[in-house]
Length: 92
Image (cartoon, rainbow, N blue to C red):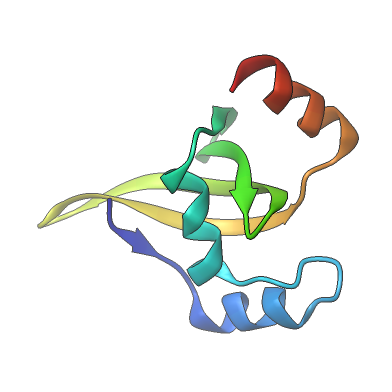
């Protein structure tokens, strides 16, 4: 799976004490079992809830396409809320 994201946004997320990771680390979500659903239709975005460095995170992403095929455009992330944790535990 290929990923694209704003390096500036990734650094901003990493410096935020509530988040503490960037998009580089967040890709780990897709290496383990995770929960995924559709967040919105316009623009079409998805939510993935999964583990990164021992913490449960929620990642918002979109599926895009270029001349090489599909890739994931990472949009934002945050530590999962209690409700998201329950959703993950019930479905992943």
